[in-house]
Image (spheres, rainbow, N blue to C red):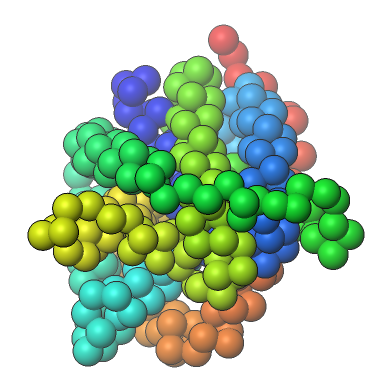
Length: 326
């Protein structure tokens, strides 16, 4: 895998859990101070990425504990992206389509996408990164015309805000998914991984800045998808209506790339002939446990940082045995 492909895949993974999950939770914790707490979380995550890229994950993944970590993390990421995909599609695009049909469409796309291995996933990521970068740039430009800096006030410390949980959420949601890539690379490039993570965090901070300045922290806490609602505020030429539906493609790209990498990890643990059946069973369980039961999904929103943090901590402790040879 090329250095550029490593950077691109890391970028997608570091962003994936923030849409529909991380950002809405973060705004509930720290309101208009979310960007400051997330910035601290991004810096601490940067240090963790630097440490993780000194480890030899080819040795870790072959151990029993490594396989357990990969299995749990992959399932968790697939479940999270599938919930987000179904909720986003049914709420804003195909409102009359059953969630089962939507989930199966993602399943078929992912199963087909992993057939040719990690190289084809990386090539797809390289192509989609051009679209994603264009959309991100467009959004950033249009956001500038709607900024209201008064939404960041007051800047004084508020003891009701939970800065610690925002920092932990920022770290676990952006760092832990990157393990899906590190576990698959025998010789990864440190600078590429670090660069991909840094770009991902910067894009997340831009999102938080835009949401706070355009929607305001109060509305950001109410909406499940504040990023999408923010896009509705983007005003272009009068004849170009509902542009948010086009700009939101960047969210679908993050979901697709993360689902592909997570499923590819499962493919290396579960035999191919069982993977398809396992996937269908998993979709059925997820649909009946989370996707059609918002209360259960809300628990995932607020406690995902615990699961992801535990997986990250175990990996950090376990990885101390294996340093990467330069």
